[in-house]
Length: 190
Ligand code: SF4
Ligand code: SF4
Image 1: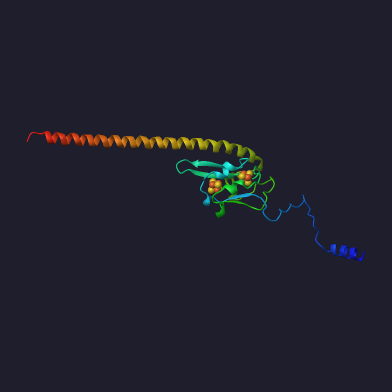
Image 2: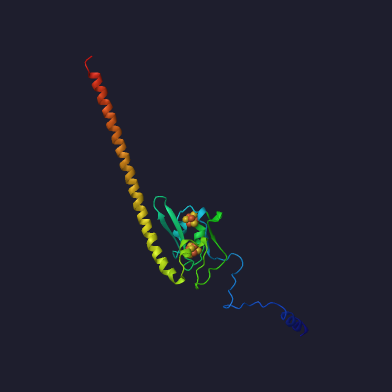
């Protein structure tokens, strides 16, 4: 009885173990918590592995310059299922190119989270209500950019082949011309 009384008395001065959720955010569990994906463009080799492995398609690269093959990384934290597959697959993850943070993405409220490491689209869209529409449009643009880039590369290859053939034909014609003029010189009566 005395033991119980002492325990109750001690509890009166301790912090409660409970939290005031949903009025306070629920703290993430300690340890290897799977949170938001953060990206560092300067370390990326644009191998597309993260995009290809992502189950819900929450990572999308858009090719914005065909000459330089410049690609923009886009991530949708509200599509992401936080499986970590993209980080596991990224060959530059150890250097910090793709990292799974231990923070949760804030709920889709009045503002979207802004961070360069969340990719281009989230930082460009102002109104959270527009995010879904903007993502749908991005999906179409990204697909189109792949197709156009493949066509651009094909045309470049064909152009190179044509130039090579033209150079070979020119060289052959010059050699023939040289051979003809040397034969004419040899056959001239002295
Ligand atoms: S954590 Fe999973 S769902 Fe999220 S972006 Fe990476 S692969 Fe996609
Ligand atoms: S897997 Fe890594 S290196 Fe490859 S495109 Fe994705 S972020 Fe860049």
